[in-house]
Structures are given as structure tokens and as C-alpha cells.
Length: 373
Image (tube, rainbow, N blue to C red; front, side, top):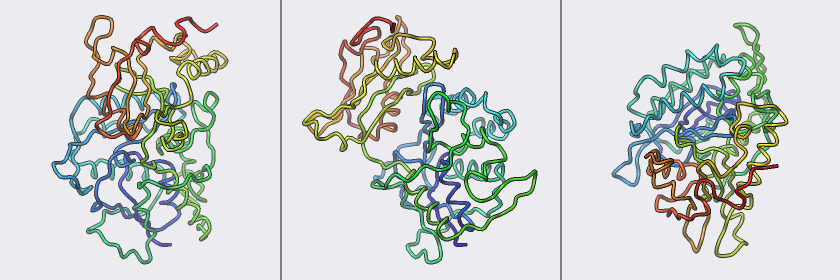
């Protein structure tokens, strides 16, 4: 089988390991230019509030271009603590989290200087736990001559197509949200444990041994296309969100590529309303008796900080309430810069987007301030 050449990624998606299992040894590119708003420094996990993106902050380079191997991790904020808390909260009820948690916790206690080292060691740990016995090494230089190698370095670039979904597997919140594709591979590992390989290739785990089924050329190509389609397309998006300022995380995110809605005219907004989304999630939580869900506990969608990303006359804006200035219930509890970074990463926005403050988006205000019936 040809070796597989991949970009570096933080807790890569399941499709990343589908590609790994479809080929021979694994090469991770470290001499390409770092690209923001890709899986190089972020991953997606399933939480009680829906899909959540975890982003590793990086030190901003003084140069417009920077090699991936030179990207340093920023100590801005308590992101390690926040990421581990998010993983623990999301998967504490999964079948295998308790079994694997001690393998991952040290990564959030140790300080890594470079993103490439952090990503690579996490990827190798997932491969080890999943029983993927392939050699993984970093590239020694950048080359365009990749004859005999499955070159997937460009999969983080814009313009890729959505693939067919991979095999479904059991997820903690599947009854609430249905199957959620394109999540980090830890979602598969924590939910399915030793069966990880069953869902990423024709390898079926049995105890400490594995029986390997050689991938055909057709299976190999399918894995490559799957991987390409599941990487973020890098296009700017419009949408809605809520902000958990305690854990510095966005949740309840709904979004779509801005170009998809350009027929709206000079102002482009996402078609789904906060009220509609919250009421649907509330009804699901009640039907499933999910008493731990924020959607179950809170009827009123306006009582948690929320915002809307929209496009107007070639610029991006984010509608928010006065809460964005940091004061909630008389206490300073919002870091506007941290919120800005989260929005840029989640919606692929330029750094110069503008916050617009309007009373409609204040806490306790909205289309209807009444509780759901």
C-alpha cells in the first residue's frame, strides 16, 4: 500500500484515521505553511448542547507565512483546563472514557511549546489505543514529488466537496441529535473502544490482536475522498450561537457558508432563529428526560448570552447584547478578546469583523420574552 501524507491536526476527525488505515505508513507534513481556521488547531466533539469546537490558541506570527513546524502554542487563558473539562463533561457517560481518560489527561497537564509536537503525540496515542500498528513520522522537507504516496496535504484548503457519511456508530447523544459525523476520533474511541478499527477500515479488533483485511483500490480511494470532504472548507459563514462565558465556549451553533445565501441581497443572515432552535432542543430534552441538558433546565432562550453572525455590504458583523462589554449581573465576567477568537475560528471570519450591540440581543430580550408553553 502507498504511504499516506497528511497535514497535522488536533485530535483529528474519524475520517483522518480512515485514510490512515487505507494506506501504508503515515507521513505528517511539518514544512507546509500554517493555515488558520482548519483542523490544524481545532477539533469537534459532541456535547449535551450539540457540537462544540475546541481550539488550541497559537502565538501570532510576525510574518504573513509561517511553517507548521514553527507554530507555537499560546498560554493565553486556561485553554488546557477548558478543553479537558469539555472532554470530561461530554464523554463521562460514554462506555470507554473511564478506561482511556488516564491516557489523555497528561496531554492537558503538560505544556507543549510547538503545536506540531502536541498534535503528533496525540495522534500517535490514538493510533496506539486503537491498535493501528503503522509507522508515523514527520516530513524532513517539503516536496511536490509524491510519486507512490497518497498526498492529502491539501485537504484543509477551501473548495472540497461533502462526501458520503462514514459508518454510523453509537454516540452518547445520538438519541437527541441523531448521528453526528465529522467529529474528533476520540468520539469514536470513547464510545466504541476496541471496535474503533471496525469503523475506520476492514480491521476487526479481537482482544489484543487484530485481523487485517487488505483495502482494495476502491476502498482506498473512498477513504481519500472521505477525508477530503470532511476537512473544514475554510469559507466564511453566517449563523447563530450561544456563549458559555464560564467555560469560554460557543454552543448551539448553527451556520452555513455565506455564499449559499447571497441571493438575500446586501444583507445575508442565517435562516434559523434562536427561538426556534432552542424550542426544538428543549422539546427533545423533555421528551428524552435529559435533565442534565441546559435546554431542559432553561426554558427561556434569551437568558444566556447569544449572538448572530451576518454579512452586510461586503463586511461581517456580529449582533450581540450589551453583555459583550463584560458585565453580567453586576460582575465582570466576559473577555471580549477570547470571545472574538472563538467566533473567528468557528465561523471562519476575518479578524476585522465588527460587534454590533443592540437591545434585542440583551439578556432577557428577544422576539418573545415568554417561556415556552
